[in-house]
Image 1 (cartoon, rainbow, N blue to C red):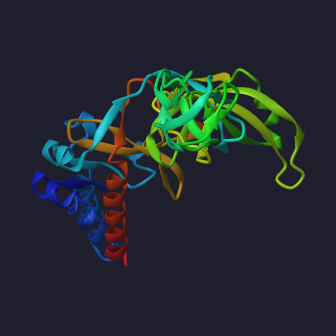
Image 2: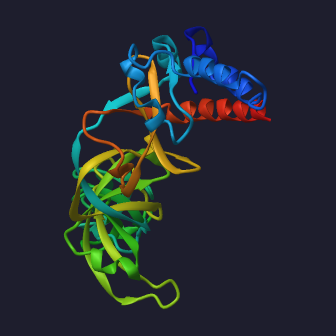
Length: 343
C-alpha cells in the first residue's frame, strides 16, 4: 500500500492522499469468480511497481508491517508540512530522573543592613521587594550636625523587610533593611523513596519552571533531609539554583531533571520521532527523496526528551523527528479507506 502526497496538497498539511492498493483490494473481493489468478497478478503489479527498478522502495513489506507501507511525499510538500529528519548516530545520553519541588524563601540567607550612624532617617530610597545591587543607595541619614550619610547595599539581593520609616531617629545599630540573596536561590525537591538511592549531594540538575518554559536553570544537590515524610513517602533534597538574572521567584514550583552520573550508550532518537501503533512503537525512516516507511522499534529508557532504541534502527538511517505525527495520520486515513473498500 502506498500513500502519495503531491506538492499541490502541501498547503493543507498532508490533507490529501492517494492509495494505489485500492484496485488490488477491489480485485481481491472477487476472489470467488473466474479469472481470479489473472486479476491478482495484475493487482500485484499495481501494488509494487517494479521491484528491480525502484531500490528506494525495497524492503517495503518488511518495514511496512507497522502501518501499512510506503508513504510518498514530494519535496515541496515536506517543506510545507515541516517534516524534518535526522541521521542516526551512536550517542551517550546522561541518565536522569525527574523530581518536583519549589523555591524556598525561608531557606535563603538574609543580611541585615544597619544605619551605621546616628541621626534622623531623612530618606528611604529602596522599597519592599526591590532588587538591588551592591553599592546601591538604600537610605540617607542626616546627623545632628547636618552631615548626610548614605546607606548602601553590601551585596546583590531582594529587599525582603523594612524595619524603619522616614523621620525616625536611628543609631549605628538600628536595623533598616533585610536583604535576601537571590543568586543562588535555594530550592527543595521531593525525592520519592524508591529513587532515594539515585540521589547524592553534588549531583547536577536542570531546573525548569512554568513561568519560563524554554529556560533551564543550573542546580546542584547540596543535602538530603535525614527523615522521610510519612504521608508522601518522599525525602526533601536541598538544591542550590543559579539565578543570575533574578528570574526565579520565591515560592515558584520547579521541575528538576537530576543527572545521576550514569549514561546509556547506543542509538537514541528524539521522543517526538516515536509513534505508537497497534503493534507497538515505530518511527518513520526516509528511504528516498520522497519515500518514507514506518519501521517498528523496541524502545528503552527516556531521558530529557531522548529515547533509547534497543532494536529496529541502526546508525546512518534517516529518521523523521518533526512531522512524524502527520505521516502517521495520513497512514491511518489510508488504512481506514482500505478497510472500507475491503467490506
